[in-house]
Image 1 (tube, helix red, strand yellow):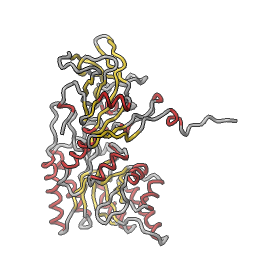
Image 2 (cartoon, one colour):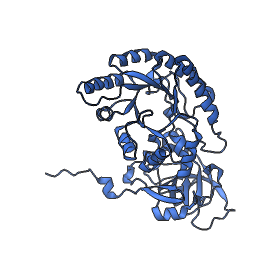
Image 3 (cartoon, one colour):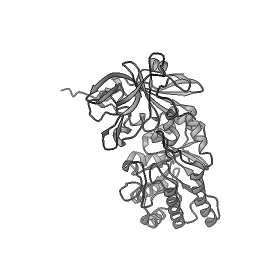
Image 4 (cartoon, rainbow, N blue to C red):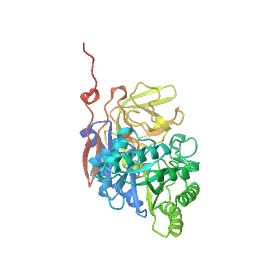
Length: 435
């Protein structure tokens, strides 16, 4: 699987397609995804019984359709994501593995009504969610109609977390996610009062999980499942599988990762004397490396010791650097024939927004850093790699900028899977009061 970090700093093609041609046809800024890369990452996780895509990472209908065609089911965190999953071909019912699961920190009223009416599986992350679902479940069963799902999954916060940023840490007392581990028995009893059965447990403590830390998570899962008892038929390893963004980072050993979870699962199989399914719930692992943000260099300027490449893409298109100080690999696509001897220099890469923080080369805390890139000029393209996860989905209309188009390259053919927003799209729904 080709990665941009393995490519030279001059890049002219994505999945065999000319970057210049893509930019000319679809304009910039523009997201481009390589379907083959996504399919390869799905195949990497084949040992797990169920691969459940955390679709918040990239929720375009075409991406969801691709996942569905490769046997991947989905995790949703909102009513909008439930409807996206359905629109891309996922059904709400399945005899064994739920195609759609709702996992969130709360039930807003519309989401609660939807999961009840559509019999969507739920992964509950608070005692209040148990009460709300339980009350809705009992009310629905008393009407004599089709009953909601009685089986529920609980998301457990084991009391510790891990992540590449505090903002991606999803465990421990500073995280809002999950049911606190000391409240598990209370939650089981609470579910039982409504006639609900806990058949699965979910535990995800943050992105960037290392194997030494993962063993603690596995032990915590075994302990939690033991507390629930033999009604447990499924455990979920959650997500957080790391992705290589820059040279020097190590890819995770998927087999070792699986073996740790499988050992935990086998302990439960022996204890309960029945099969226990092992799910994994990756988001960025499946899509990050597939995505590229194409942008055009519109200004090259010197400010003291800093040389700036200013693009027509900003944090309205890719927010991860300003949110987390995230590193993304970059390369230049020259508009003329690439000169492999083109000199390099240190540059700061920024966008067009009226914000000092609109810098792609920054570290967490907002500290501006430099990147070594080839000399480039107006009209050259800058390609930001590993942008398939939490890129387009976090796009905004700040500064009244339209959302960028998205293109999926599959089987050697580019497909426009989202058109660029128009001004009419930007103001749709807005009204000026008239007397």
